[in-house]
Image (tube, one colour):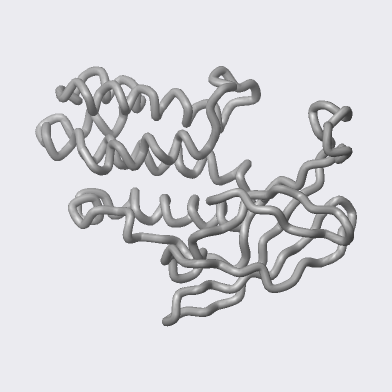
Length: 209
């Protein structure tokens, strides 16, 4: 994602601008084809993928929100916050083949969480990523300690990490992933300085260890 200026009516806004197509997942020179009118604090932008074998159109959805400070030097009192793109497909290129073989359930749940995120359903995507990671870490623990499979399946994910994950780096990343994942499912957030993207990054780190 990059930041670019887009004109809406007579006002220019600096917004998150896609540099990757949500359909083919190639990085390219994405173009903004048309901007819509602001309706109920939401505006849509039609983009086109620049990859020659795709060239698909997709829509970016932006929500207008009041700036933290209404005394903005440029005279603008609103930001446009990107909510998501439609249509979108899940990019499974990021999942190593070894993970696909290790935990098919993880892949299935992860795909659903990714799809929810691409649709802008971040409130349900977070718990989905958390559930996917629990399947991944338990399947990994069962692989390295097969005789303890029954205990691993019945235990809380944190207990599994503490008891069965011996690699210090994987253990540390797994703890952090569970902490952020739990935040996505709880009423109050504990790690307020982090967000859903941080959770996804941690999951990818574990996948690639």
